[in-house]
Image (cartoon, rainbow, N blue to C red; front, side, top):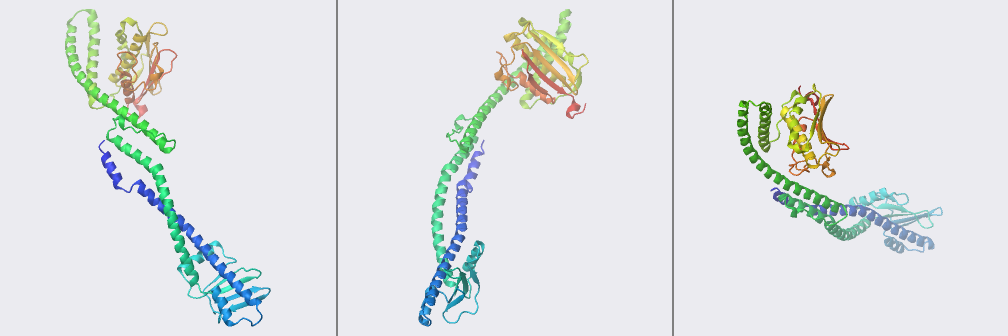
Length: 477
């Protein structure tokens, strides 16, 4: 687990989560400022024009209320200068009154009618005023008080200058507000999200450096949100992983010890095999009957030791499958009940004579030996629950697979070990058991493409495994 150092270095050298969060926060706030800016400037422009139209109408009303010819040209000029317009016209009561300083401009660059403009048009006109100022006067028409409409002609430069001043003010205010919002939001997210996430990532990197160290398992803070759920899930995962790694290490050490023991045991079995061959010279009938089985048993033991040594270097070898009769294989294992002679276990075989199975004979024998030995140990430890102790091996063909059941009338399998019964060091409940037999049997069945399971029975235990024919799993028969 030496990669945690480079991981931490890469994380520290990159644009971290805090930096990205700050950039995104600033970007989103600036987008909000832009979205607020245009409507604000457009509204300011409308208000500015409406104020000028109101002043223009007042100037026109003053002109209309005065007696004919009582207003001098100088006073009219002063009225127009107060409005900021070059000409003002008011229409109402079927009449149109014009107030102009000199000649009315013969041509205008554009006409703005505030009576019928939509917000889209107003936004477009606002951008045109800011970006493309008119080189000629513009005409603005708007509603009036007690009249049909008010119209005025004026230069756009004062309007644009006022809009630019307002833009600077709103931009400065927006930047101040945005800075405050960004700071508050950044520190809030930093406290609520970034720091907990950094704690999680730091713990993952620290745990990766020494995953077997239980002290490096993260301690949940007790939060009830998604971060709290992640902390609890990570703590559970790290605790489970640390325990499994410690168990794996113990298994590795145990495997090394077992390999050494098997190496010495193989030598002992070889010597026993040589001594057993001398039994052929004994003329005793019992010896002549037992000697071949003893030799076969020693051969299987030696082969098993070789396989165990190989298992320490690799996995189980692939099955060398052949069509073999199943009943003789089961009959050769009847003497396994002698492992517990005091229990008086009966061995019953319910296998048709003509039933053949497509399997590796050696591995099939090991499967049955482990299941039968498991039943013998259960009956020797706890006895039978229904009548005399007995073990029954049944088999039948179902289509392209053979089903085999190894049943006993012992105490059954406790509920606490049923879930992991085929795991290494998980299934042994008897004193002296290793917990390897069922795990080995399950592995060998899986190599044949079959399945193994603990069947539900009211009394005792019943292990069921199936071995499919090779043509049923895509092989050649």
